[in-house]
Length: 110
Image 1 (cartoon, rainbow, N blue to C red):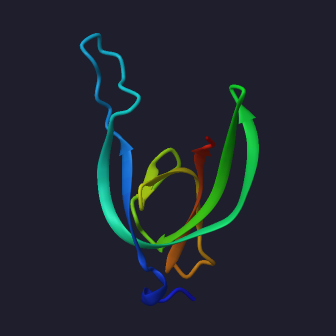
Image 2: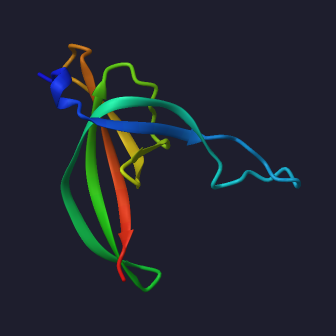
Image 3: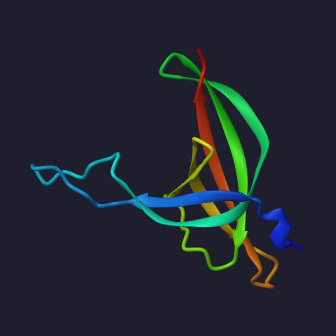
């Protein structure tokens, strides 16, 4: 059971803003804030990979929120200067108390 005391990290939830440039092309880095919620951010695992011939660490994270937070896959979560890409939203055991976000964040080495 998740208690209020375990949701100790204030995170910001963002979604793509839909903003477009003067040529009516979507702006890939345009995000808008959906809200701020309390969460429990955990980093259960990570791996090292090469991407574009550069070493890159990929960290998987689990972010637990209260049930009903307005989050879907494709959004992102910001916490302590790190950006987490939401890969999936998992429901709880049917009690509608919390939900878990399956996220990834990358850290470039060097």
